[in-house]
Amino acid sequence: MLTFVAYGLAIALNLMIVFIGARFLLAPRAAAAGYGVPAKADGDAAYLTIKGVRDGTYGLVGLALLAFAGPAAEAWFMLVVALAPLGDTLIVLRHGGSKAVAFGVHFATAVAILITAALLFAVS
Image (tube, rainbow, N blue to C red; front, side, top):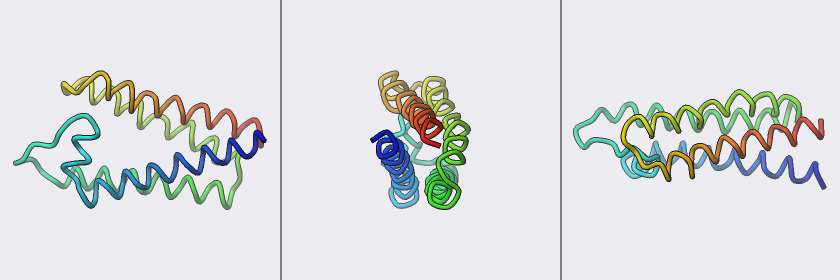
């Protein structure tokens, strides 16, 4: 049962980050608003594309690690990648975004990633 939960959470989190990356590539302004810091109309859209590529890549690497290297490799990856939503929390707070989004989305994501890493370590 623990293995099912660990793998299920890892797959779900990786697929969600692939979705977020795709959203930043396909609907960058809407994705930025959901991120917690809306993009300026006259801003450089390249940065939104960079976020989309970064997030999509993280999700695909996570899925590949889980499929081909196993739960221990995925757990280490999750520990490292948890830095991204922690950084996102600080970015949203620093740039006047909502505390609800900073903590309810980004910080909560970091916590979910760390819990998943712990579960993956437990089953590896």
